[in-house]
Image 1 (cartoon, helix red, strand yellow):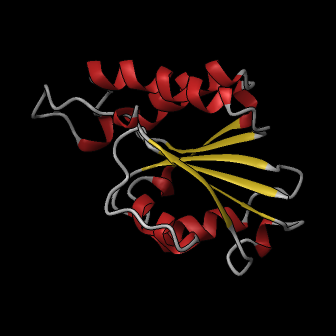
Image 2 (spheres, helix red, strand yellow; image 1 turned 90 degrees about the vertical axis):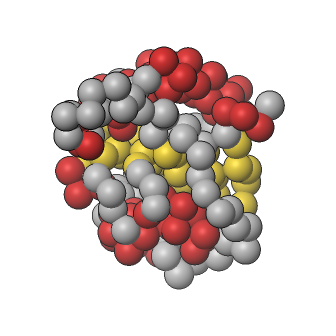
Length: 163
């Protein structure tokens, strides 16, 4: 059984208009929301083996909060430059390359690709994954190479303003 947790990065700062999009850090709300959402995920008691994330500053900062609260070793957190503004197709490709020994995987990325990808997984749809939202699915498969064509069960969709 494989479980995938799609997370959109926490809210980023636009304080410096000259800063590149890739280099934007989290803003105050993002730094407040990320630990709350990581704690909510922790309380659901899923086994998480790995975090894959876009190497942008805001996704890296989001990952660091989740890694710390989930108690994952840094070696289990892998940055991917190609996840920066990745399309749904690119996200599917990344999923298919996950080591089959990993059963619970968090993928932290960006809109619009993360919302588009979430909408391809089950019959549950969202118009937009808000910042720091978590969309989780599970599939009874042995290898992540089977994930794309396998039947997936929707587990939950949570985001900071939901509670």
